[in-house]
Image (cartoon, each protein chain N blue to C red):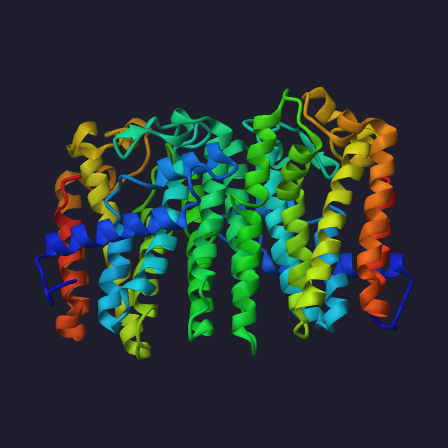
Length: 299
Length: 299
């Protein structure tokens, strides 16, 4: 952020470092009571992850001239919701996974009840972060709370996870699979983009709709690439268990369309996402770069 | 609410019915996708419970002339947080309980992953409810989000549950036991009282502090009476498993002070709570009656 347009990789590293530091400040200190819970929250949240949702929030903030300080809160709130969902999804009663971001999952490193409380507490923290430091526009801040709450709940992320659980071993059609992912990963990715944009100047309704069209495409693209990587990359590269979905007989875009078909679909989604951004001109530089990064990532 | 001061039992029934109806409206319909999750959310939330926290919110709203419509949102948001905590606490990896409000617990009636998602979704719903219908005072509404988020998180209710887990089989001193309960049950009861009052006219700082002193006493009183009932009442009367804390070797006020000592302590707390309310005069009628109800309840 020191120059107007440093290379994408520099921008990405800078945002990732900034978000890491902000998350560390927002999280309760490791020694504060109850210490074990706070240590487990910090273990699960800090020191890993691509921070895709925070990057999307910062990139969308560029469209509306948002300040980095406002974006810190939006980006960290979304990331807290994302991390809570990973911690709960990894628990034995859900996906029962032992590896996340290259390290033992929270319930393995700590224990099941602690993992349950880590997820619960990170969700509360997200709304705590979003409601702090009442800005000059509290109505806008309240709208951000509402956007994040809806994206997280039973008609958003948690609802997608419920559909995912119910779908194991069942053949899904492409529309059913898209609904599941639109909720499970798409809702929070859309929220990240919208929250970032809401940190700056007000947008015209058409701009907001166009941005949401981009976000829907980017969210689906992220999931399709995830499915491709799940069957082409190694556990070591991913930092989480590879081949898990196929082993669990879960429907994926690869199982539905084959590897080639999924790769073609990803290419189409990338084009559609980039097309949507053209109305923003040079303000959408980082969103454009980020969509390409999401499409071509190797981990 | 048709007359100025109907008897307490009528007022209580009226608020309970009102809250039941409001919760039913706020919860997604049972048939909306994902149906099983929404059915489980409704099963866990509706048709039972004393609704102590909503009653406290409505009673505190009387102090500041709050409208019933504003109180619906505050009361239902707090109750959603409370119900989510019951659903998660009953899970096999926590207290592993099978009976709640006289019915099978959520994970018994449905399954463990559904119970996990029910709790997660109810927490999101609480913040969704509080952030809807931006009022004429969005800054106040944002403050309510912040109060509820802090009361729910790792420095509030979830933190108290973590201390409770860590304390099984360990002798706690009275200050340690009070810290645990101040977080585990006290934080949300204080939030219920404060949120109710925040729905009306602004309070002077001294009034707010006095109200919080009442709420702290009432929260502790609620817990001490809970401990007394856990060892004196039957499972059928309580609608949840009686004698559970003693069986789990959990520290309680009865194990610390004996039954007589705990009963004397409850009497002292009730007096202190009622004393705090005197500055409010007749505006605190319902809070006064509610404190007596909490002290002398049999279930």
